[in-house]
Amino acid sequence: MKINNFSAGPSKIPQIVLDQIAKDIIDYQDLGYSVLELSHRSTIFEKILRQTKAKLIQILDIPENFEIIFLQGGATFQNTFIPANKPSLLDNISFLISGTWGKKTHEDFQKYYGKKIEKFDIPNGKHGMNQLISAVKRNQSEYIYLTSNETIEGIQIKNTQLFTEKKLIIDMSSDFCSYHFDWHNISFLYAGAQKNLGIPGVTVCIFDTDFGEENNLTSYLNIQNHIDKKSAFNTPPTFSIYVMLKMLNWIESNGGLKELESRNISKAKKIYSFLEDKESKLTLLAPKLWRSNANIVFDFKGKNLTELFLQESIENGFIGLNGHRSVGGVRVSNYNSVTEEMVSDFLLFLEKFISSN
Image 1 (cartoon, rainbow, N blue to C red):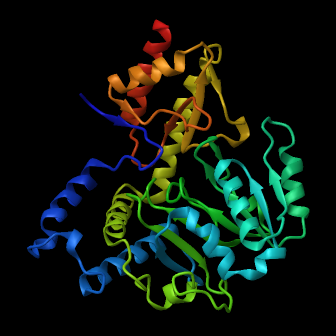
Image 2: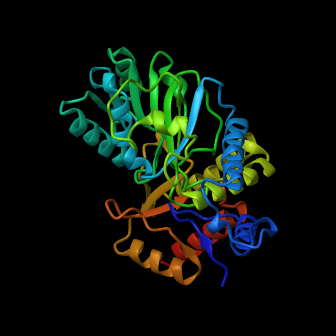
Image 3: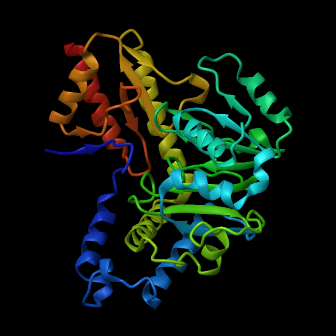
């Protein structure tokens, strides 16, 4: 049976990349041993690190005044790492909260600093959007935190130029490397790799060179140690970084961000158009103006239909469609590796299910 993986993460990996990885797990570059066995101090792995950073710079057009480091601990570790290395954020940051992960980050920042931090919540409906953006622009904070894509609620904020006068700190874990964006007002960006760049284990941090401040932190927390040691201060997640390089090569071979963004928009429009046509049967959960191209969430209006649909979807080879346990429903994750064919197959299956129920 053909499997169509729509998981929110860890996500689908293109077959061509899986084939390359499988070969290298047995014998990396004809060295006679596995990529899993590479020493993080070896010249071979140092080359992987250099190439990975170079590909990120090339694909994302990262300016010269930005540092790139690879860390462990996922996006959640950044809730400690960032405030620890930037004490001056305490009275100089506000949060634009669009969903669960932004809320959790806001709570962690408040715990770390031991003080309330101003926040702005995105309204559930279509009203109040302009007022919200205006309020964020008017507030006195120099820095604004936002989550570019909330995987649970299916809400996305791609346009960083909505806040041109602010310095942005962005959790871009679930839509990183899926569209082009402007760097001019970004101060610190981070993203776990397990959506569009491979497997769990490594978090990419890209930040302005003057972001860090003098501190007396313990060694792993200190951002300067990771800069100085070029992401090898301690043993980095070597395999996750290797897979990221393979995914970056795949992105490049598929036309780069411009082409992938076009594909992602096309796929998302196709899904949303279908769902809107079935509004008597289905409910789209995200406000229309903020709907995500990466995570499309909806639910059935009929009693018990969601559970039945998810059960039948697995039986028919469609996996990872269940919504997050905190909200339920259905979630279609539309990452770079999801193909047009997969989307067509899914919509055909959904059409048949609706017709039968």
